[in-house]
Picture 1 (cartoon, rainbow, N blue to C red):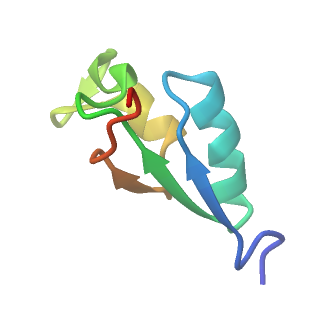
Picture 2 (picture 1 turned 60 degrees about the vertical axis):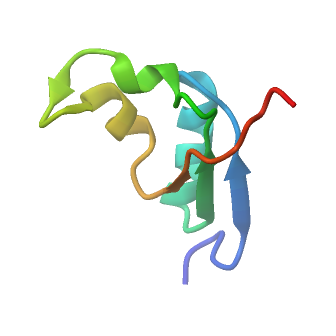
Length: 74
């Protein structure tokens, strides 16, 4: 059993600071769902690119479920 088991967190943050904070929730066992704009988090395009994906994006979003289906502007 982990500290946040059974807790669901919606991560609507972008770039670095917010995703890092949500990553801590995932590390403690929460079910974190990453919601992105239709064009995706700009952090996806940051270097270094490893196997076609941003190493930076992968480092702060590991363990999260991902959804890029939300239009957050409306």
